Length: 453
Image (tube, rainbow, N blue to C red; front, side):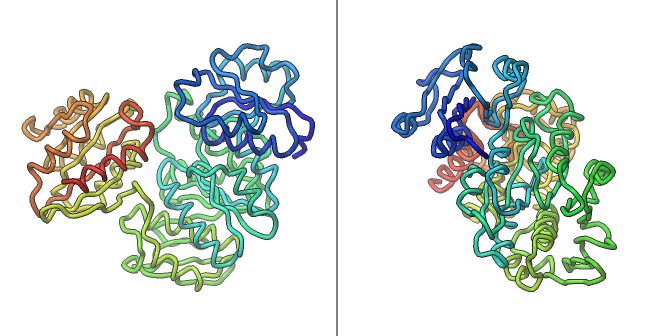
C-alpha cells in the first residue's frame, strides 16, 4: 500500500481511526483526522497525533474536507451513509476501512473470524493455537487491537488472527483472508444495517475475495451460515456439535475431532476443555479447524484447548459471596448471547439484564428466563420493555425488579436475596451505551461492586 505523499482523510476518532492515522503518517502521507463531535466530547488524548503533525478537524464535516484527498479511511463506528462519505464516493475518492488497510499492509496470511456471538473467545483461542506453529502471531481487529498495527508488527513469516465485525466490512473491497470462519448469524445491528439481509451480506463480504487456495469454515448447525457455502468460491468445510462431518470439526461422543483429507485427529474431550458451555464447544471446534487449516498440528493444539480459560466479560467468574458465585457476562450485548449464558447454568439464576435497547424480539429470551431465572433485575433504557416482555411470558411481578440506571442498586437487590445454590449473572442482552462507554466498562464496574460486597 503506497501512501508516500498522498493525503488520507480519517473519519472517526476511535481506536481504529487513531491507529490508521498514525500508520499512514509513518508511511509518508499527509493525514487529516476528522470527527463530527467536538473535541471536548471525546475522551481520547490527541496530543500524540498533534505532535506527529496530523491535522485534526472536529465538528460538522463539510465537503471542503475532501479537497485534495486521495483516500478516505472510515472507522467502524461510522456508517457509510453519512453525507461526507457519500460525497467522497460520488467524487470517486476511494473509501476503505482500517481492516482493508491492514490487509493491504499484511505480509502474512490472515485467519478471520466473524459471527454475531463468540468472536472474541474464538479469536483469542485461535491466536493461542496458531502460536503452536508460528513464531510470530498477531491478534487484532474488533477485539480492541487495531489490525493494521498487528499486520505490520508480524511482518513476514507469521500468521494473523482477526476478529471482524459487520461494521468493519462496509468499506472493504480487497480484504482477502486465507482462512475465514463464520460462527453464527442471529438478529443484531439491524438499526445500523437496516435489515437482517444486509447484516448477513456484510458478514459474507469477509470471504467474498477468497479463491480455491483459501478456506471457509462454517457452522453446520446454523441454517444461515450453512447456506453460505452456496455463495463461496473457496474450499468450504463445516464444524458441528450436533452431527459428525465427512470433513471438518465435530463431536464424536464426548471427543472433539478433526477429519480432513481421509485422516482423523482427536483433540480432547468436552470435559477436558478449559472453556465450558455448549457455545464454547462450538467456538473451540471453529478455532481448531481454522488453526489446522493454517498449518497447526492437532497434537500441539490439544494442550491449548485444555488450558484456555476464556476471555474477560464472557461468562467470567468473579467471586463467591456468602456461598453464591457471581459471573460477569457483560459481553452479552444481544439476546442470543444472553440465551447461551443462561443455558450454561442449571436453574436458580438471579439475572441482571437491560441497558441500551437494540429492540430485538424478546420472546425466546424471556421464555428461557421464565424457565431458569429465579429473580430478574433490570437496568437502563431497556428496563420498561424488558419488564413488559417478562410479564407477557407469565413471569410474576414479584420476581421482576427495576434498579433504574444504577449497577450498585441492581447488585444491592441481588445480594440481598441471593442464597445457595443460586448464581448471580450479569448477562444484559443489551448494549451498554445508556450507562457506560462500552461493555468493558460495564463489566469492570460490575466486578468492582461485586468485589466490594
